[in-house]
Length: 295
Image (cartoon, rainbow, N blue to C red; front, side):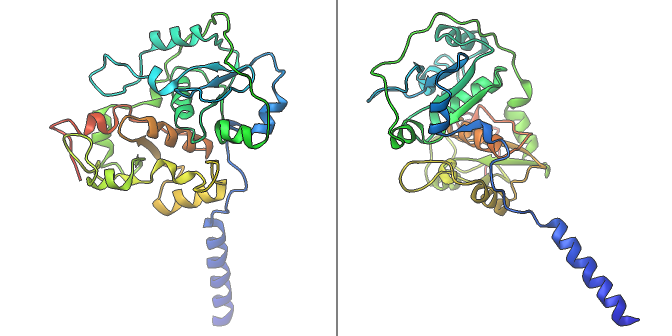
């Protein structure tokens, strides 16, 4: 009888462990958000395809049919008291209309390769209610690696009719972050470098990090050698799991000006995280406030 009880208990424990084990992902849960160069090339004749070159400077040609929108500089509100804060809805709508965007377009964004500029625009589009956007994996470097054609200059499109619809659940402010620092159901995701996180690299009045924040530098999810493609889903999943960044928690990504934080936002979305609320003020606000709690 004791032997039978032992067998039942052992089987029960093994079954429980198997149920708790998370199998490594074979692909990104939201794989449609990350487009490969050959995939984009096959879509070039689609009428609703809208390609945006988000680089600040165009040093070589552009992907055929792309418009140019220097995302990082164009999305920064120069009049805002917080450095590089995202422009407001009316200005964003005007800029998107100027490049020819309509709400029913299918947007693919690319940059020089590391997806920083692309992710910044991806986040802005998400926040202002445009939900049909992908980033080109590896940017222009990934496109050239496939020996695909380039045009000499970007295209100029007729004015579009894009209209915004603010998604309030996709941002948070200083007070929200202060409260979240002590909430076990919320992960504060610091995408800055380790030196910024520890305060060795001080870029505001205060150095350090938000209490209970978790640090994973934005570029850790990219390949270290060669073209900066996103690492495979299983590798990113393993990084997140090791730090306790799990999909059952709300996640607040940030950096210094939320450019790198936007990259973390995109990666979280790519990995299927449904509750992601970037802190737009980031360390540029937090590190310069007298009433901020610092570790």
